[in-house]
Image (cartoon, rainbow, N blue to C red; front, side, top):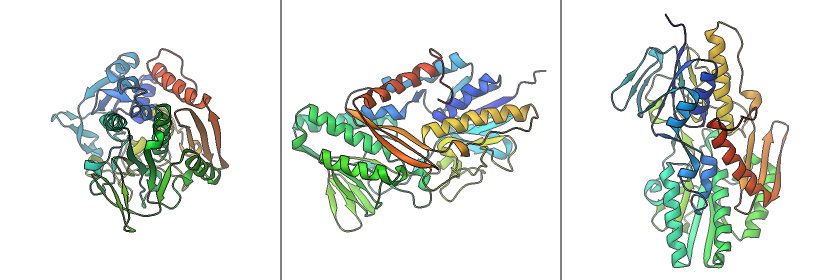
Length: 393
């Protein structure tokens, strides 16, 4: 009788895929369940709206990853999680049970604002939305003029669930794109957010630099007032004003996934799975939560990012293996908490880093853009096993 431990991983994003890869390295029998048949590289999807890349360029078929790394793959959305029994029901009605370990990595949901679904698109939502942004921007360019508003929202119950970086990136990329076409003066670009200091997680120096970038690019700001609703021609705010817009991109803050909220898992106030620093769901033997599904511990400036999700995934693979060998050794993600990104502008970038010791934002004209392009290539090739992985990446 085989003594190989069986692990069920839910989710085909950064956390789920990384967990499956590293669990297989420890010779676990792994089944990965995903609601779509490709792994989507969100950090490089920022170039889809300007036509620099396509959805296919920033995607990896999951079946290719499954073959390369040797895990089983099921494309079927999760409809129910019964963590106590480690039993999962899929949308097709198929029941997954009998596993030694369960890893929950199905992501998060978004805080809904009236009209958001009908009148705005997100670069951090369904991949189809990025392609739709490209289509709408292209129509405005054909018209030769327009008003474009891009921003992000907050979650007052969980500061880690705010994703603002991509909003800045797409906005600056659109600015660069319009300048290259020689029609920037015909467009009004506005950044909006409900908080007084959007982007403050990056640190005070970064905030000052962001203000300078907005001034240099002639991008307007509408901040500090709660968003009431989205309309076909703009956004209304609690202060009674309306921001007119022909194209609205908005990244809503995260909240718990509805499947997780309906499960028997312990949840935070915002609906994320409560775990300890080892990503174990305490009181549920052999159950782990990682990535956007998990409640993120740490300082107020902490943020749910792809590299943090992958640290959680690698640690969880290690912790599961050690547990299976009855070895008392575990890895925590707390010491790896930081904000790290190359914030692309289409013609350069800014290196942003923050940890408990401080923060920095370093401009990288021209070369920064190609560094991020290079990372995108590295991400695809390394996950497909075509080039070696850099330790910690």
